[in-house]
Image (cartoon, rainbow, N blue to C red; front, side, top):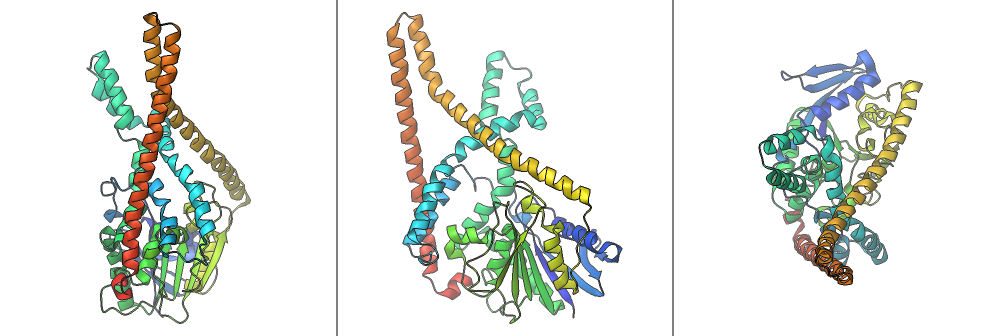
Length: 451
């Protein structure tokens, strides 16, 4: 029986074949010289063989559809404050089940997430300050720009450059993280780039079905959402029969969170017509993106497998291709025998040391960025009153200088409070508009929502 594996990569500026190559490296570590890899003219792995079984690879490559340029504006500091209103509004619109998501749970999440989401702005600003000294290319660009400028113009250029020019923070957000709001906003509207991504999946599945009898799907990160959407019929061309993959493997999947924030994009349809279909979801307890899929078992039997070791707060989302739990399950299903790589004791010890370091470094960097951002905001709020008081003292105002400075400080604090409240209300209105689209789409006939 010929087998095929559809591989759906996750977020980030991926290269064609990159995710497949990581899987091949994991399989090579498990099988050693026994693994035979077949490549195309460009050097991409298209088939592997071991234990007398061949598995053809079909990569669903979509990174070129959600590039950094195309993601510009998809994620701003207001994205999170807008999104945190979704569960409450969806609960009111009865898009979230009352039995699975009771009102106290939704309100508790809003109470927790809304203040935290407002910290996105100072954290982003602090991160900009934190990374700038380490961005050598950016520093070179700045030096060449201000080389022949007079002092005052140079100071102004430095200020503008520091405040507005892109840093590694923006590059990371637009090149990696913004894939999620860009894709999901499109899927939520029922049009746009998400359906271009889904078309890639449907084309790969069509090719695989035409040449192989048994098909498996392996998806990572946002790719698990793409795979689930596609397998439940979203974006599928009219007239095509339901897909029948034998097995779905999801690794680092945010589907549980997607259902909480965008419930109308999750259609209650079985992902496979195969009566022997099984779904295995791998997650890491340190991975903030993924988690166990507890609210999908009504539509398909889901086996949740928690990975052990291999990464902390930073690496836990990308350790799957070398995880013994993952490789053992995958090789058992594809090749008939569970095969995992042997890891030397010193490598396990080194991995634990690196994991401890990243678990410490992550929170420390976050706190430092937040303090820097809050400090910068405080300086902006207090600088003007301070300089006014200095001028008044120089003019001989004496005690009045302190009172004026205090009054101006309270005035600016009140102005900042009004600004924050207005922004929160703007985010609320944007969330209402988004959920209204979801309510309209969820009330449409199923065939309209799926096809």
